[in-house]
Amino acid sequence: MSTTEINNSNADFNWLKRAISENYIKYYDFAEFTNWEEISYGSYGNVSCANWKGSDTIMALKHSYNLTIKEMVNEL
Image (cartoon, rainbow, N blue to C red):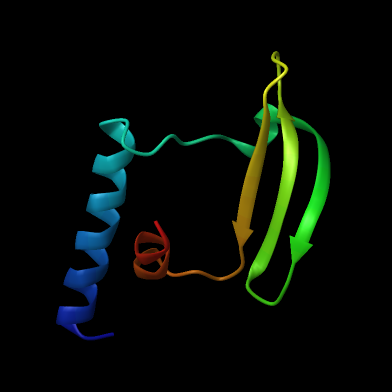
């Protein structure tokens, strides 16, 4: 990995950390969910719905396989 690629990766990681800390993005631990039901899947990952523990809230959750930080930032 070149120095430029490392710097770009660090910038993407820092952007993601800042977006979470400033509440632009809400981080949820998968352990906070129950009653998982798969909606769709593919080579990229899967999408499920689940209940957020302690509430009646149902959320859609996307789990992507092998994404780099840059790909995750672009996805957002």
